[in-house]
Image (tube, rainbow, N blue to C red):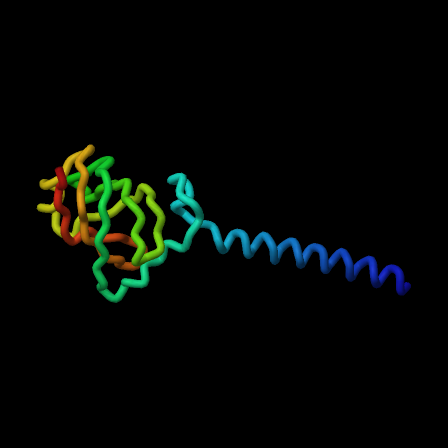
Length: 124
């Protein structure tokens, strides 16, 4: 009977340990890792309205949906490495200022899970 108890306890412990390890790995999953960037936490600390500045190359612009994709340089203020991300324009008129291939400097803020561009400037 003691041997059976230890066997069941060891099986239970092994299953528990495996679930714990896989849960921890899943919690660290980075939705932006598909962009080829190293894993990192993507939550901006500026959901309080703080504005961040970055620079990068515009990959695409959807003027109707007010969306833009930018391959940006690192953003040290957020601990972000260089990566390609989707943003939305706060004001639709900002979409008129840029096109795919443009080098740009832009200001953005975090609104929940959305990164909103509040200003953008094309660079030569």
